[in-house]
Length: 266
Image 1 (tube, one colour):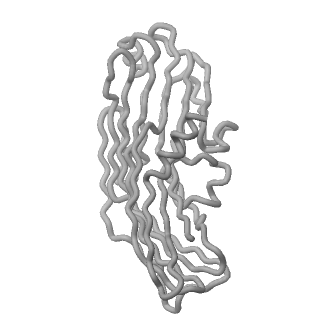
Image 2 (cartoon, helix red, strand yellow):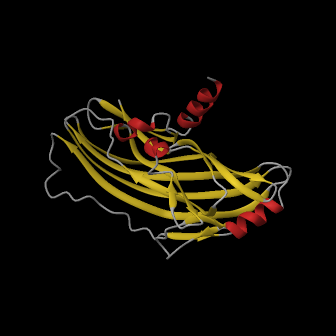
Image 3 (cartoon, rainbow, N blue to C red):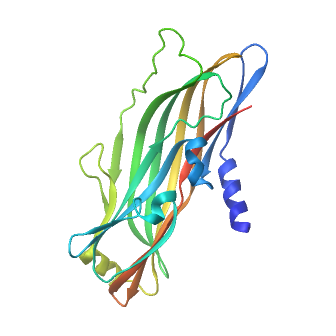
């Protein structure tokens, strides 16, 4: 229960509230950014989510994908893989979008996001070793959603004219810039180098700093509201433990959270 309480505080501490009068009555729009505790129902409550997709390649060329495995049906959680034949490990940040607006019918809404995120990757133990960092600036997305209401006449969903910028260090591979795919990538030789210089468990941590500027225009039977909110969340996104026998990799444990943006209206 203590762990759950801590996550709840982390989620709602980053909530921004905007009360915008459009005559009578006044409505309140609230945005919250933080760990999603109910990933099976995220499509009904989340506008945006950032998950981690783990791919493992074996010596014979076959792959294991956490996102498409039975473990990955919830998109988050923990899994363990035992194998001495791991050739490569890749972790992909995976943004997702869903029009899960918490609004009573009828409504029309246009939502735009601009997100900045940084992922610090470290090997933790007796000493902390930097394994690289990924920085993403101005990652944008726009969508419209409607229930029993047509968009205002002549209205088009705007798009943010922001320039995407990406940089990475260490084991972060940027792929073909600017759109990647960006991934944290280690091969068998690099894994050996990590293990040979590690005493005790080889725990790789991924710490996330995520901030979002959300622009919205919402039309209901009460009128139209427009505004923007800035929300942010920082914390331990997940861990990857390299299971080892000396400097030999014998498997891994994986545990990550889904970080979600929610909107509530009262």
